[in-house]
Image (tube, rainbow, N blue to C red; front, side, top):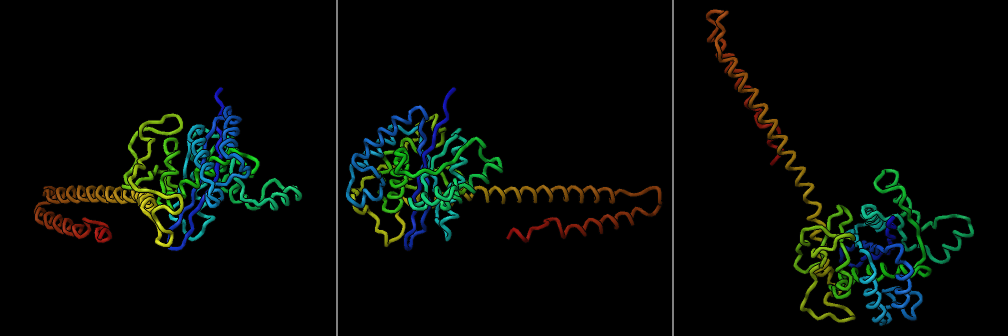
Length: 344
């Protein structure tokens, strides 16, 4: 019997002045049998940094551990799922739960049974939770509420388990940490060189619709075809080639100038992902209206034809029948395009 993959999950978000923002989840899928090897590889990539955190290491100028951890992710991940809620919106917690909802649905489709999510609780909060005899940290309760709602609504398998773990105690969480950071750098600073290290084993999905997105400069959608943890078709290669030179400290986009090209391309795709459903609803409405008009026209024609035939059982009534048919034919003509003015 094949073991179900385990998903290790971490988040990142973009909340900057004059920037629409985004909430991001990265889930790295790992075969349960490979977990000991992955943990050893993560520790080796981190080197002396026992408390690995990508953003902290970057600020301190430790670049090599970041590259090594990204390479470890590319080498050991069965697959990587990125969920993007963009724009961020007014309520960050709502954006997080929307992204988490889509993430759990995607993981359910991949037959994941264990989801390990980095806790948001501080060490002090974790200690208080233990001392009070509770199982859930207050900071993690919104995630658990979302998970339970999906289980009750039968949107995910009840066998899926969600647990929050401190990344200080689980090196496998360093893989999604660096992956989420790399994606964040691409969207904030137009620096795709970090993300390109894991792009071949990653898929990006819109939190609202679940549609697949692509991190590209030309805003093109990814090639059609099957892709995912089981099938890595050519479409799994994201197009990130660029002739631009990227520095390690700032990229090509200044934060004060708002979103850059990569973010705008992603945001355009999220907007387009929600459009087909609206277009489909409009087309369905037009089709229903057309069918109704056709039925009404057929009924009017049939009535007019019946009234136009003379009634020989009552001599002299043929003319009256024609006049009656004419009057009945004219009346409905004012409504042959029901609802027509509303389409304007």
